[in-house]
Length: 183
Image 1 (cartoon, rainbow, N blue to C red):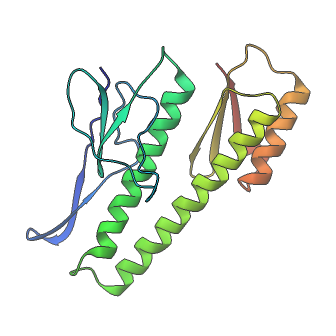
Image 2: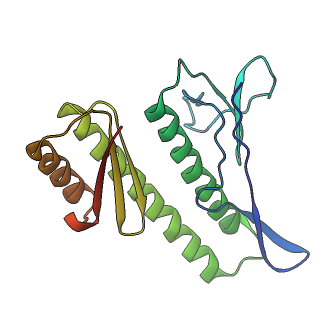
Image 3: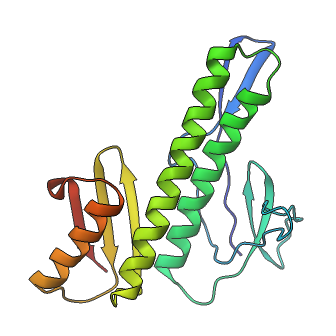
């Protein structure tokens, strides 16, 4: 069975006014794969955790998952997406809080927009890499540093240049900040 446990930090001005915030890397992935999403609203559906099903827990609730084998790329992408979802949920709580000041809400909305833009750029870059023959790939962004993991035993200089071109163009990154690994 796979379970993703969430860790949270508390943020607030006093003990009666706290907001749950997830930090980068707070999702602990134990097993996962395909996410059950409510198609009409696009939101992650709630599910009940039990030992018979693969279930992960996010700030939004539990998500039904299935893993067929040990697929590093699928589980890593799911873990990354859960982390971004937790971050967005945390910022949304600030926006929805009646005790947050306008400046905090504005900053929280800007952070949500940045996360959404980053997720979109990552998705486009990963899809472009797939169309170029790098079907198994994942991109991790940590500040200016971008790590790209490709599921191939060997990469030619032309392939490395092609990967760097896609990443630098879609994520507005300098080539020296792009780190390519093979898996």
